[in-house]
Image (tube, rainbow, N blue to C red; front, side, top):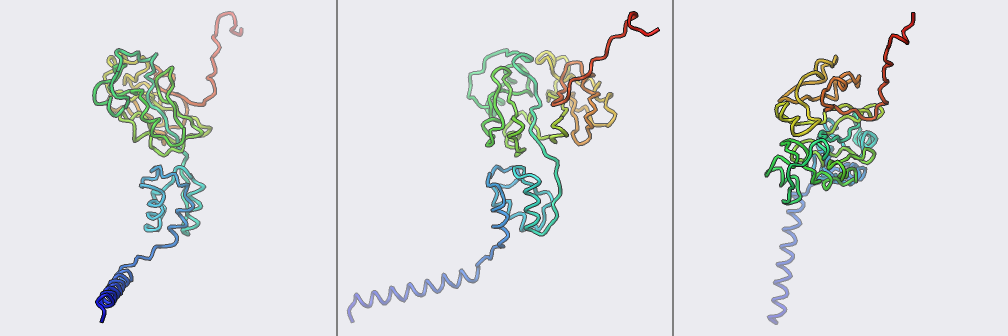
Length: 286
């Protein structure tokens, strides 16, 4: 027989044997994927922002189907409406979650915390935080180099050139938490959006002693505790020389803000306070 024909036959038989082996292995180890994964994945926004705590939307969908539960699972981009849609796909009940938004807990602007030197290193907060306390002297405050803005995929932040601080565009913020993770000073926090978008929080994370903190920033929290005493809902704690308002306990009564001697407490979207009329001898009723 012709050697070429023999070679072709041998190669053909070898190929058939390998094909049979591959087919058998594929059958033996085939993983049948739950079709609900595709349904949930298609319902998700596809932002792959990591706000849910998973590497991407597909991984999030797989986790939901695998766990057969929505407990502790939430897509901040889609919010409660999306959570309800996913619950319908899974045959589960969706739990409502209060909408959240990012807030910048530092008010050490160029005016409140004047620069003591010019930083000329790499324009990255992550890099600069390892070198110095910051141009204003605060070891905990905003460095103003915009890592948080770079991390945001939703155009919900920008750097204010006048103040040197990042600004949150509330209507664009989806509370994905990317900016929170990117800040080496941990000055950005996700807080409940609040009724009528009203929020109260301490715009300072400086843990230095009062006099030192005030020297570096005019509006620094000095740890005096007056706000703690003013709060009747136990919503304010004083730890490491700095006050913190628990947004879960806060009832937005606004009693704490006037008590702060440095103006470290920020109120957002509240109506102007009513100015009490000064009582004099002339306007007293007889």
